[in-house]
Length: 71
Image 1 (cartoon, one colour):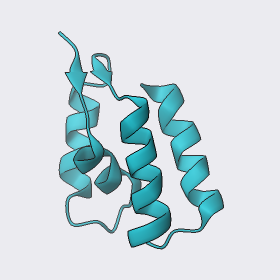
Image 2 (cartoon, rainbow, N blue to C red; image 1 turned 120 degrees about the vertical axis):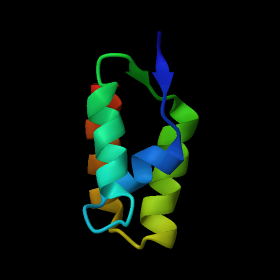
Image 3 (cartoon, rainbow, N blue to C red; image 1 turned 60 degrees about the vertical axis):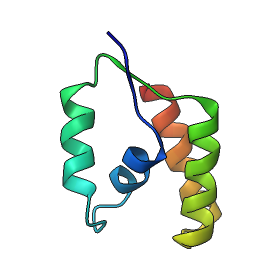
Image 4 (cartoon, rainbow, N blue to C red; image 1 turned 135 degrees about the vertical axis):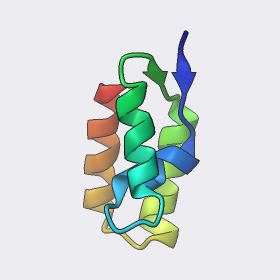
């Protein structure tokens, strides 16, 4: 069975100071062999990181690049 992770899991996973980071990390580790994300989630994650969370564009792009090869 595949498990789909959306932005609400990926964004907290990207930031160790996020209140839900540990919960997201636990779910990702639990389902790492069965997890999938789609291009829309990557786009939303980039928009959130570089917009609302004010991460530098380069940092957001690096995270997207790394996460896209993981799932």
